[in-house]
Image 1 (cartoon, rainbow, N blue to C red):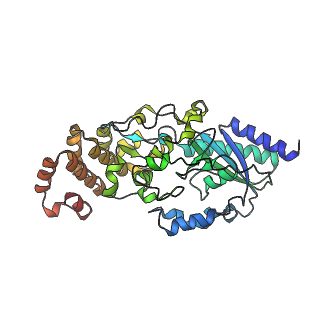
Image 2: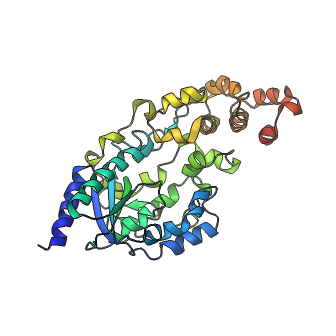
Image 3: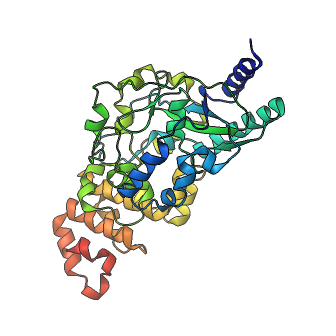
Length: 371
């Protein structure tokens, strides 16, 4: 056994010890087309308002552009495989659907803690320099993970693992060590297009290509303003993210839920939240409910906006009183969503409310909702 292989075996064992179910090695230059593909995506404007994708595009395109000393990348995956059907709440009108990844502890904290533990151990064992990254850094984890053999980028553009399906949080350790790389993963999507057909807002212009501007996850999380009318019905009762393209992937049948990190187990209040409760939240209430959750970062106004869109799609007239109360909310994006929801559930009440408001009472941000 060579010294290199012995160290890699120990890295894998330590990675498993701190909570990672997948670990692979790639050369720092193992995904040479990443920069080109990213630039094309940005030039087409498919990133929407995610300006931060543009601002550090060069560093995203190549590990060496972010850190010139990097020689190898240790790609890591932590499972959050759900125990039940992520689509079970589809069509349950008075409840909101939260993406599986956000129903438990904040993955930023959990994965970063494990990465740091592994990094400290490796620095002591091998005397190397390293940097750890999860999500918020300008790192393209998916192509690097594919190069390291963890899985392949499926037609929904997310990583698919033969062992863990679509349910992996990804992290990376950049290191100065020259480690023997693993073989890259091969695309095993074949002729399957289940993820493409499942998308409720047609966010895939072609297989392996995503237009974030049409994606429910982007619209409910990243997009700060009013959600374009053309996508509202497709959002259904999804109030934070969307699992549809991931959930229908046939490779998920191999995902062992026992491998999921318990930190990501769904909190009871996030499994099937009542839309009426969410719409009624003030800022303090929002911060209390979503404390310790990745959802907290979108802020109260976006969450209430999303809940109102879901209410408008619910067909549940019992939600009308809380919707009417939101017509006078302090945030224009909430007032606009409330007007739309009311127009869907109770057109006569909507007409009465519109007639009872003078033009001066309706600001420009909401005017289009009132018609």
